[in-house]
Image (tube, rainbow, N blue to C red; front, side):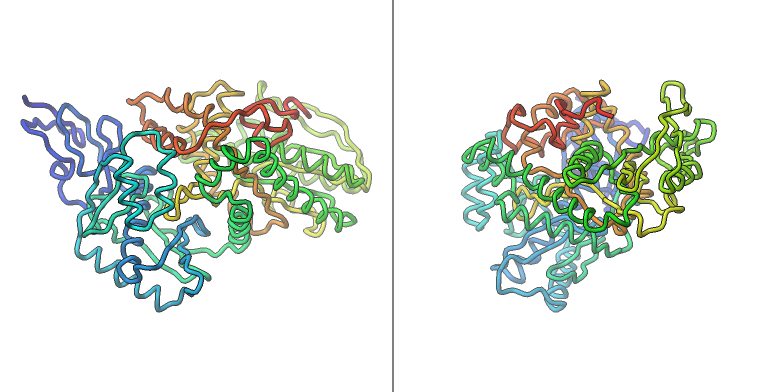
Amino acid sequence: MSFKIVLNEEEIIQDEPISILDLIGNDKNIICALVNNSVKELTYIIRGDATVVPLTTSNREAQHIYEASLRYLISMAMHNIHPNYRIRFSINVSRSLFLQVLEPKVIVTNQLINELKVEMARLVGLDLPFTRNIVSKAEAKRIFEKEGYQDKVDIMKYRPEKTAHYYECCGYKNYMYSRMVPSSGYLTRWKLKFYSPGIIIQYPRSELDGQIPTFEDTPTFGRTLKRAHEYGVATNASTVVDINEHIKEDGIIDFINLCEANSSRQLCELGQRIEDDIENIRLICIAGPSSSGKTTFANRLRIELLSRGIHPIRISLDDYYLPKERCPVDEEGNIDLESIDALDIELFNENMTDLISGLEVELPHFDFQLGYRVPGRKLKIAEDEPIIIEGIHALNEKMSRSIPNHQKFKIFIAPQAQVNIDNENPLSSTDIRLLRRMVRDYQFRNSSAEETIASWDSVRKGEFKWIYDTEEGANFVFNSFLSYELCAMKKYCLPLLAMVDKESPYFPTAERLIRMLKFFVDMPSKWIPSNSLIREFIGGSCYEGYD
């Protein structure tokens, strides 16, 4: 029986099943395709009526597939040149991957990198097929044990399905928990760079329309990631299996308190840094990307400082929004509330200067229902009362240009997770923030997961434009990731993601997040402290409604 395929708005009548690859041709810029709004590999066979949308690396989901396929290629190339080397991938600076050789006596050198480049180029040139195989979990464990992938064997017991997958290329077998490109010939775009003690791997990014970003070394961010990895190793919580085993064997309460102790330790260290220079500090500026936990963090920092005899005052940048008619617009002509120019920078600097000088100031209050500012509280501060400023632009020099730098202490906050499913499959901190925001939007704004995902690209665009560059000027970086959080949020996230309709353009993202969450064990939230950063998203925070 014939069926209809719609491709690029053209209708094609097909009498027999056909693969996407045969349908679209050998265009290696196309990484995967949407078939009736579900992401499919190019080898997928279409057997009935379908709408097909080819995707390149300018698409977020196609980028994920390209990056996973690239990790497979690199792992295969390293196996070919040094079969005894175990490697680990993680997230690193400049939107890149980091490859670490785990063998203790192996030092990464330019010679090793050149060997890897040559072998990768050879494999790409041969255009070798990546063949997907579906087997029972028992058979998958047998294969992974034979290949020496104990980390993949360990995670298998947390896979809920009865079957598992792996990909094979010229006898090489591995699995990256993702769909893949059809063959090695698709992976022509990558850069390798020595970055002690390992290798930086750059690849096309969807937010740059599929281009590879210019490498920018960001040492502050790099040190934060290194510290996060060291913490994960020290507490045996650097993999999903480690986290699950903590909860199952050590007990939920112990693991929650272990993770919360890391937050408290960071707060203590931060409080000491501020106390040591309190004679100079007048502004404490807090910024970070969406769903970093800024509000709870600001409240906890205030308590930490109070315990040291320091009496901070909190002021929100949200109260300095301009009226809508004076706000800038984005490329689509919509009001751009992410822009720093949506804030009354002149008034903010005038107010801060007057407060620091000892004058009484009537602060503004932005009434979001009215859409403009109204008179707020009157405030006069003493010399031992620093001002805590929290907002996405708090670290931008333009925001507080009238205040001398030595009077400002800048804090950047974000969840910097260095957690892997296994050695070759790192989790994304961006996905963690998206899940946090999704739960919070539903809990407190009655927004659906679909609405949160729909806004995410715009949020990310604003972060790259306004926020990330400010981290390098920070005096302190606070890692807000809690190793137990995905176990705790799983029961909140999965029902929301399941409600995303298969016809929705945001279904592919929901489907990918479900695949990630399924490996985590469930954990009840009742033992999470009321002042935890995670309470800002799941509810039950002691700071809800607190001003």
